[in-house]
Length: 333
Image: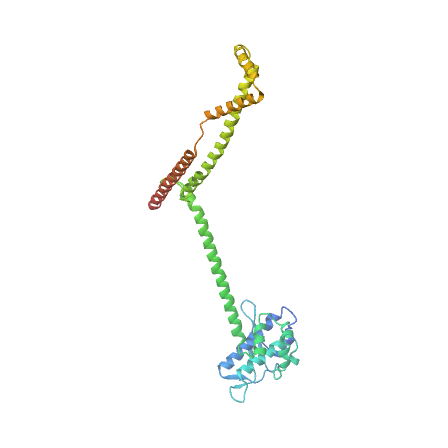
């Protein structure tokens, strides 16, 4: 690499420069570890393994890109072809994971990859000082022995986030399209008010509207008829009693010729007992009742059936007219 563009330092010097206790340095450390993982994968792809992760022999290259952001590269001083007497790629991945946990927790001297029991049993404590987005990766490497490169994990996670963002964007687009569709449906009736026929879609909102109204009227009208019949009966009863009472009062208060003519009858009636006068009064009331023409049961039933038949026939008639008109309107436009 060009030494004029890159700043070269050992991994130990890098750790002294950037401290994981500082929040602003944690993303820098994460980028550096990604660079080490990327370089290790390159060695593995060429059938080499890292034989020494000594922090004083591992080289870190630091530079700035066109936007001024830090970029890193790494190099290992000791490596060898993959063979039966060398480390395996899985061991390399595990060693680098142990190295990362030690750097994040500032306790590299206490972690020994050759004796991982302590690290496995206390990983939850170490995870508290590590970035939450990479904790699942290092947990899988250290506790379960997975052999996955950090860059592959990050790329997979980025792809999942991109897919999630695309799904959310698609969902938002569908919701927006549905919203516009509903708005267009609400505007459509108003746009058709002044069409060729001068009609409105509101007239065709429900074909069954008029038949339902007529059926309801067919039920309500007989009920109203019964109520008025009962009131008419009461009215006639009160009218009959009132008429009879007025007639009696006339006998006592009217003067003139009528009083003279009634004197003889009054004298004769006065000779009658109280019971006879009461019976005479009831007989008069009965006579008045006979003059009233009452509707018979058969007539009432016949009138009710005729009313219901009239309502049903006209309901079907208006329903047919409305359906025919709606059909013609749909065919025309």
